[in-house]
Amino acid sequence: MAAHELESVARSLVAEGKGILAADESSPTIEKRFRTINIPSTEENRRSYRELLFTTPGIPEFISGVILFDETLRQKARDGVPFPELLSRQGIVPGIKVDKGAKDLAGFPGEKITEGLDGLRSRFAEYRGLGARFAKWRAVIAIGEGIPTAYCLKANARALARYAALCQEAGLAPIVEPEVLMDGPHTLECCEEVTTEALRLVFSELLEHRVALEGMLLKPNMVVSGKGCPKQAGVGEVAETTIRCLRRVVPPAVPGIVFLSGGQTAEQATEHLSAMNALGGYPWELSFSYGRALQDPVLKAWKGEFANLPAAQSVFHHRAKCNGAARYGRYTREMEKSAA
Ligand code: 13P
Image (cartoon, rainbow, N blue to C red):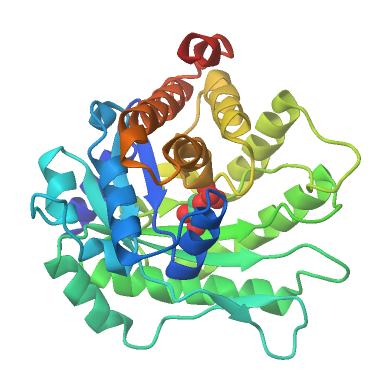
């Protein structure tokens, strides 16, 4: 695909007022999510839950693209329409998670390396044939005693860049996701330091690998206090620190930054995004690519029961709408009350 086509996919994913739904939970992860509402992770439950999300009335106003898992890309709605087509018909771009998960990094206790590069070129060709127009690869960086090591950051940055180059070669726009985890007692300052170094290495590798920055999106964590840190930074501090970090290391050629929610509550994730967009004046679009922050409240409303479908869809619509407002810096706590 020509470079301008990759750029146009990347730009459409960060269109005004819209963001991405990450619905690409792998089989073990969706099982974990379903366990919270006591339903078994059967193929049919996974299918009907994703159908609930993708058929929610009104979501194309706020959702530009959906990241799918391999199984979901091949599934169909009840009426027989393949999911990628169901999404495309609504003007929502289908995407695919292509990494094979974060595994223990040999010789580096407590650190992970993401697998999935072998055979990726042919998988990309198949995914494109099935309708995917963008992809995602997630690297995981933990903060702890003596970690992350420079080697772990380098190895993950290199894998992300190799993935992104293969992705663009196949005509899909890559989402590059180096996630610095919130787990641990570390401070906001520590998260900023690690995130800055992780992103600096990622962009250095992307350039070495000749990845066109105009035809990709960055999916980073926000800079937040570790979950176990006694001093939790407030919304304003998170927004300012995250922006300072991103300004230092993300080239303006990148069309958009789509945050992951990473364990923040749904409302926190929306509030933080809104606060950053309210500050404004960035070279990139600032948007969302949330999994849990869009879906946790939906799962709770659904509980695996057909009768709860309209209620669950209205919860999803509400969260999508709140995040749509956050794209303009216009989300308020009042929006939550009006929904209740
Ligand atoms: P969360 O928003 O739940 O962190 O998920 C986003 C994602 O796609 C992680 O890879």
